[in-house]
Amino acid sequence: MNLILRAHRGRVFPLAFLLSLSLAFAQLVHAHSEPTSFLDFHSETEQLEVVLTASTTDLAHDLPTIEPSMLLNPATLQAQQNALAAIALSRLRIFAGNQPLSGQLLNAEAVPDRQDLRLTFAFPWSAAPETLRVEAQLFPYDSRHKTFANFYRGDHLERQEVLEGTRTTIEFHQGAYQGIWAVVRQFLYEGVHHIFIGPDHILFIIGLLLLGGTVARLLKIVTAFTVAHSITLALATFGLVNPSPRLIEPLIALSIVFVGVHALLGRRTGDTRILFAFGFGLVHGFGFASVLREMALPRQALGWSLFSFNAGVEVGQICIVAVVAPLLALVRNRNAAAGERTVTALAYAVVTAGGFWFFQRLFG
Image 1 (tube, helix red, strand yellow):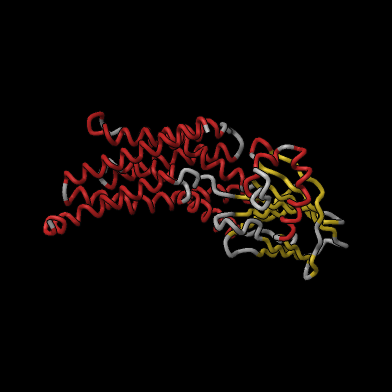
Image 2 (cartoon, helix red, strand yellow):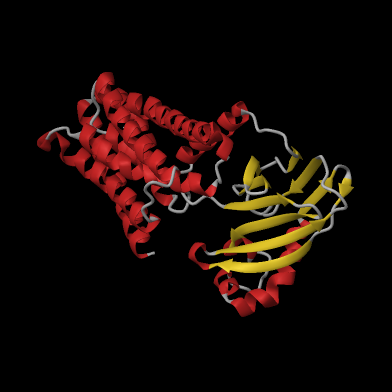
């Protein structure tokens, strides 16, 4: 028995690794909805107005007797608004130069369609300072949480920064222009990050690779997907086409089911991956766009923001292809039968995950 195990160890490990990887993605059903909040800073003559928008789930975390959905009720929100404000202000410190500012709640309102609350604060000052320093860790119990800090002058977004992890401090020089390189770097990172926290997009790419093929063939398939999602990402970002997420998210899940089924039947039905990679790429582009819409792209560098985010998505996809395609080829080359079993197991895992997401998003 030991001799048999040693003889097959080389084939068993890649199969077990790939199957475990796919099934792990299937468990991450909420990973695509990354926890985010938004701080909008508006400089006025007599005060700094700060608007915090966050989910009821996050804001109810420190109110032990309150369920998140209860905060959408106007009466409950009014009763809890002072407690919510106290919690938020205890985790948000703002300095005008070196002078700390004191904030007070102006308004609290529900955003029911997004399950969010919007809290508006005023931080009075004697004169608008040249430099603002913000120290914030609004939801320290969730290491994944990101807070997008948007600095406005009038209606113009001058700068956007991200508070996450150990990065809890921002300095903002009013009137300073956010350089193109800073925009590119930020949104390139966001694109890569979005791919790696989006198991549905990852499984779709893996599903496209299951039937294998030459390097040229795989590049054509991935390029078709890239071209398609770039088109709809641009259309949605510029507000030309904006289908509802209630339609797009189930369709993304359905596309995962489709690629899994095609991997099971592809050798009998023919390889049409380029065509449906392009078709479903159009759908996935709207999914990427929903993330960009929440980031309040800087208007003075909208084109660069869009390009950089899309490039980041591409870098993430290339990383997936660079890891998965060689592993599948290795299994096939060492043992054709083991390769077929690997593809079959992964295809079933892809179909299962996609089917679960489809029903969850359709009826959830």
